[in-house]
Amino acid sequence: MTGNSTLAAAKPTTLSNETLTKIAAPVRTPRYDRSKVSAGIVHIGVGNFFRAHEALYVEKCLELPGQQTWGIVGVGLGDGADKKAKVEAVNSQDGLYTLTEFAPDGAASVRVVGSLLKFLHGPSSPKKVLEQLASPETKIVSLTITEGGYNIDEATNEFVLSNADVQHDLANPQQPKTAFGFIVEALAARKSSGLNGFTVLSCDNLRSNGKVAKKAVVAFARARSPELAQWIEANVSFPNSMVDRIAPSVGPAEVQKVNQLSGIQDLTPVTGETFSQWVVEDEFIAGRPAFEQVGVELRDDVEMFEAMKGRLLNASHMMLSYPALMCGFRIVDEAMREPAVVDYLSTFLEKDVMPIVEGPRGVDLNEYKRNIIARFENPAIGDTLIRIANNGAAKLPIFLSKSLGIVLGQGGMYERFALCFAAFEQYLKGSDVSGGALSVDEPNLTADDKALLSSSDPLAVMKISAFAPIGLAENEAFVTVFSDMKKRLHRDGAIAALRHVVEVAK
Ligand code: CS2
Image 1: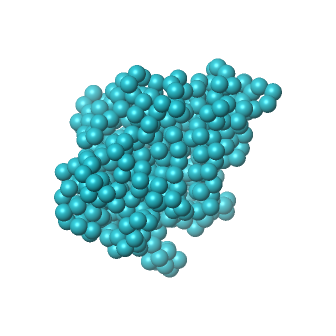
Image 2: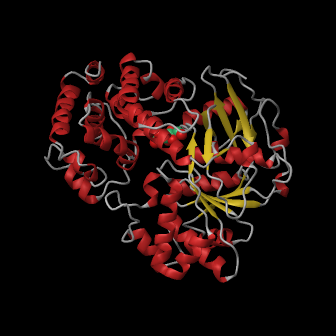
Image 3: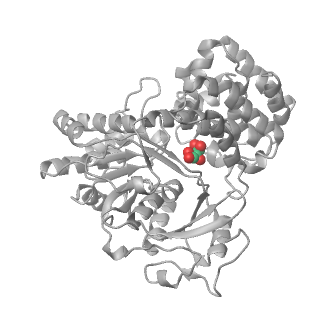
């Protein structure tokens, strides 16, 4: 199938269990009987990434013999009208959706994924969600709740019990708002009815995501009862995992494009690159699907993969997005057609991070780097820079602070990092350096951060709560380079600033 072909029959097929048989090759449909599948997995945070990644690995498992207990019930925690509408749209299609994978040469392949059996909406049906989590059939609770969703204080590295939603959940255990409120209430019910625990599987881009999830769940439980916390430590496992697949935002234009390609009238299609990787610790206390048969790597050195991916790939996304937005680009591969952008990313990877990151056994960092550049260059997937830029206050410290801490400690080169921060500062103002509008979405900025950012403090961006622990504003040398980058960005433009930070590294 090519990017331009249309498979559509005269009238597009809607998506549901009933219409599955009407969908013809080359669109692939589930090769198992959905009516025989039960839900061994509850997934919290059903975004595009989850539907293009975990749900596909599980789909492949469901096609194997003896795997039919591993279907997924999705849970959405967002309480906006749009979030509820998404849940309804997915359910109106019996949980089915199309996944279109785009190879770098533009070739596309479409499959209908059936592993998501139903989608529950936490805010309107907390009881149903709690029942599902507490059900004996639930063996794994997986999470994609975003980097900021774990509610860990960057400075103390502790779970923030004073968070308003956490306090709400402690006071109203039957109507939780947070993932931790739901998980701990369900575990308390399992404990009191003599059931076993389950695996909590974090699939967010965090360093040691399993350990972070454990910290959050156990801290929340301890605030309810130390005995419950102890039971959880003994009966729940928290494997670390590294997840990787670029899954862009899918707006109305993309919906139309992929639906035309597939001939299916899908209300909630997802798209992704062909590349996909999942490396997981084999610590599933209540069992797991036959992941090893569908390309999941079960390894004991997952944290090395997480460190490599976060500090090289996600960090490159961060380093790319703000300066590239300042250049006037809006789409990742368009930015990657500008040589100054590619030179800058290559310099960042080769000079700033590769020397200070240890790759996992058997992984060649140079090849990993080439692969990152090639994936970003993929012209078929149309990933937006703003998707990557948004939520920078939560993501920048996660992906950059380890490397930045080492570089600051060694008194190394600050130019690339400083340019990224100068561009981030301008992005927060809602426009690029030429006045082009940017839609900023920064849910993790606190009221204090916002007050600081609207003050006249020239170093405000480095002092917001997420970055303060890194100590950028106190580092005179960094501040000097940051001020220079700011000047260059506004006076010479973003491309010239990018060329400059490449030149100084030669
Ligand atoms: C991106 C990720 O927004 C971001 O932080 O870097 O969503 C990235 O596309 C995925 O982690 C790729 O696996």
